[in-house]
Length: 225
Image 1 (cartoon, rainbow, N blue to C red):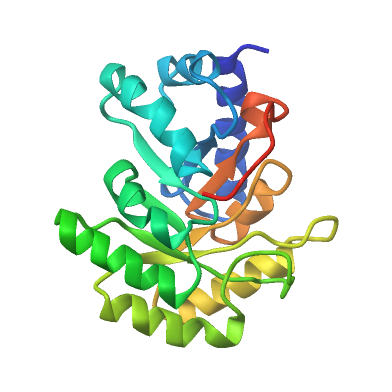
Image 2: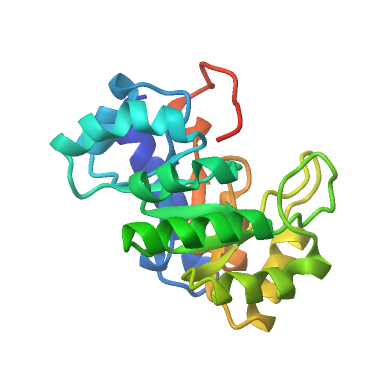
């Protein structure tokens, strides 16, 4: 299947899930997760009209996207992976949206970087929704305090983000994230990936992060941003 066919199939599935939930498909942003994939895999999606892309690592994004943006300047680049505080300035310079704000030290680093560059990027606060020690994200109980710190640092908080546990029904975790967002007065929900994005859309996702369903299997190992 060609890139434009895969993109059309995913877009159709998003629209169907949104219709079932009595939502507008236009309220769901499809982020094509291009981590580990080179320009030769990305350009066909760009040519098919896809404009939101997600990268895990600052270094990888910096190697690929400046050249691609010369051809396609209207791209929105999302950093979706764990971000090291010492990469905050690079992230603010390169990205348009940051999805994994998960600790006070990163809030502080991003706030300083945004002040220095006079650039405010929408940020999602990542919640460790399954309370998994190996995963990033702030603890559920720590969310109000972290959001307060983010607002104090003048980070534009767009919403919440999560990665539910693997191998179990994601719906309860998505529903919990949606509940937490409502309680905090947030409307953005970055949740849902290739295996569960339709469920996420039906529960209220505003951003779904889809990699393998668009690009196929990963070609390189992941690393921290």
